[in-house]
Length: 274
Image (cartoon, rainbow, N blue to C red):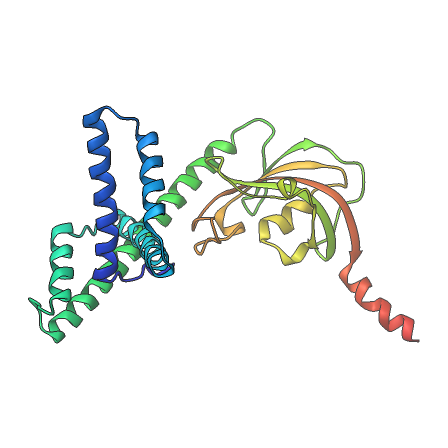
C-alpha cells in the first residue's frame, strides 16, 4: 500500500488559492451569462502574456505544478475521511509568512506527526475494507459464474470455458508458450492486453501466476479459452499494479505455439561442447 504523503501548509495554500480563483471565475461567468470555454481561453491568453520574464515564468510553473499535486493529494485524503478547513490552512500560511504561530515548535511537530499517523491509519483501514469487499464480490461472482452453461470448475477452483478448441499439442508446465490474451476485472475493467500491444507474450509456463500455469496446460495449440481465476490463483491479498487485492481475474487466452522445454534448452549447450 502506498503511503499518502504529508502536505505542507504553504503548498496547500497555493492549491486553495488556485481552486478559489477558478471557482470565482465560474461564478462570475454564470452571472454574466458567458460561455466558460471562451472565458477560459481569454484568461489563459492573458496569463501567458503577463509572464514576460524567465523568473516570472519559472515561478508560475513551479506554483502551478505544486498546486496540481497538492490538490490531487488533498482530494485523496478527503476520500479517507480527513477534510481540512481551508480557512484554517490559510490562517496558518499567513502566520507562517508573518513569523507568528498559535503553536510552539514542539506542538507544531506533534501536530504534523499526528496528522501523518491519522492519514496512514485511515489509508490502512480503507485498504482493508476494500480488500474485504473485493473478496466478497469475487466469491459471489464465482458462485454465480460456476452455474453458467459451458463453464467447468477444476479442483483448485479455476473456472474456464472453451471458446475455440485447438488441434495441436498441449503444453507442460516446464514449456515455454506463446499466447495472445486480454485480462479484465469482473466489472469489465481491462488491465492488460497483448492484442492492444499487437505483440504476443512468450514465457515459461511455470513462471506465471498459478491460474495461468494450470489453465494453459488444459489447452491445445490453436485453442482459445476464457479463464476465471480466484484471487488465490492470481495475485491474492497483495494485488498488483492496477489490480486491487483479492481480485478475481478474467482472461481470454489464445495459445499460439509451444516452445522447447526449458530443460531441453538448457541441455543443448552442454551437448554441443562434447
